Amino acid sequence: MSRTGPLGAKVRALRQRKRLSQVELSRRLGISPSYMNLIEHDQRSLTAPLLLKLAQTLEVDLQEFGAGGADGQLRDDLAEAFADPLFEHEGVATGDLDALCSNSPTVARALLGLYHAFRDARSSADMLASQIYDDQQVPGERLRMPSEDVSDFIQRRMNYFEELEQAATRVAADARFDPHDPQRSLVRYLAERFAVDVRIGREGHRDGVLRRFDAENRRLVLSERMPPASRTFQLAVQIALMGERATLDRIVSEAELASPPSRALARLVLANYFAGALLMPYGAFLDSARDERYDIELLQHRFGTSFEQVCHRLTTLRRPGAMGVAFHLIRVDIAGNISKRFSASGIRFARFSGACPRWNVFTAFLTPGIIRVQLSVMEGGEVFFCLARTVPKGRGGFLAPQTLHAIGLGCRLEHASQLVYADGISLDPEGAVQVGVTCRLCERTDCEQRAFPSIRAGIAVDENVRGPSIYTPAQREPPQRRRGSDGA
Image (cartoon, rainbow, N blue to C red; front, side, top):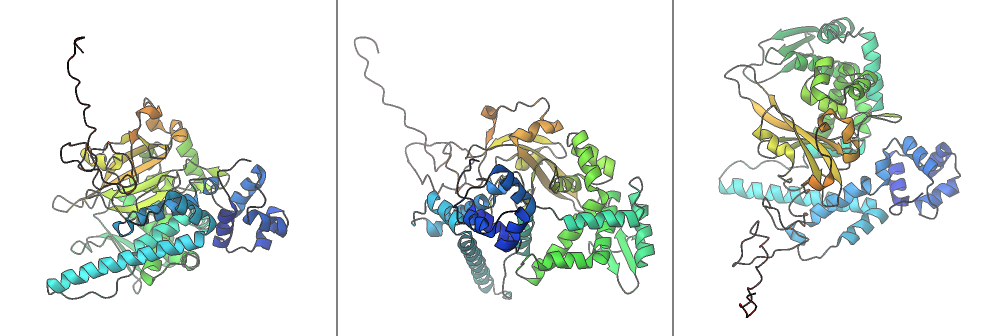
């Protein structure tokens, strides 16, 4: 079959990620170890049937083997790192990064790790200088943000955990789970299985605690400030933390997370995954999503969950042989901070700098509660169908503060027709909004919202001509010719 470039390094990296030897992987694929070795050294090509079997065996999407796969993400992360002004005069070309990621992905990841460490050290130094200047207490050693570690782990696993899906199915059967009254089912299960008394109360009003478990007295208190869907979700989270501890610990131990805070956060994220799988069972949810053409609001009413919970669940439908649409998801606040990100669609997210403001996830704040759709075309020509809506959090009364986030969900253009939101929308790529990953990597010079110059296009400042932005002056008007005898 045709392919965009050597796949040996990708196969080797994915095999090592699964901790399989060449002999074991060749046995599962039904080929000889010597042939497996030739594949990994790009001396034999991958046939279409073998590539499909390889993807199923390694539990990855076929996109992992394309230009937008794991190496593509690594290459883009490195490109963003080298967009730092620190490297402005090094002249690192895109071809250099392509060769590094394809031939030495381990070295590329190590280099990216060094840049992470450099950024953290630089931030710590800036913070230290500021606090010394302000005569404040100096903080302890700063490590890489746990949220970054966990986001990378979720991306590596493509946000799919079969062991948690199976655990959720088992618990649903043991709990005699009633989808029409999920809260009562889970309260009963906690009482019968763990002798836990569940109460809805005012505890935690002052300190903002929504769920508090008292292990000594076997009491779980959920705040009355939470809506019913959130209470049910927290019940499922508590079941995961108590009943699936061994499974959570095993997954976290295999995640190679750098610090105790990262591992603690990963356990909670996995518990949330379990909760979503319990309340929205894989098979029933996938069938409903297909039948209703991924109508998020209809799905949230059917399964008694929230808009954000449904969006999260849609990104986890990656079971081999029973996959849903490959979505990406991003959550931002009104200041543009990205608090959640995941991409199964192949779209790239900024890692070290601000995201492109032309994404509809940012304009969603202009129309709270209303779903906005957008056809987005990236610099490489990939077109994505994106939808976004704001989601309020924390409204527990008139005087309670409310936080507003925006959730962005999207897929590749070829899957857009499966979504109800594409009805009546022109899917002609010619009308797509031009979107970039981040200003420093974007070469488009006609963007009015450019905040920084492109490292690729450079700075072209002309004090006599003002273009769309200060970094992109408009083309000068050609000088008028003198009027001649022909009147021209």
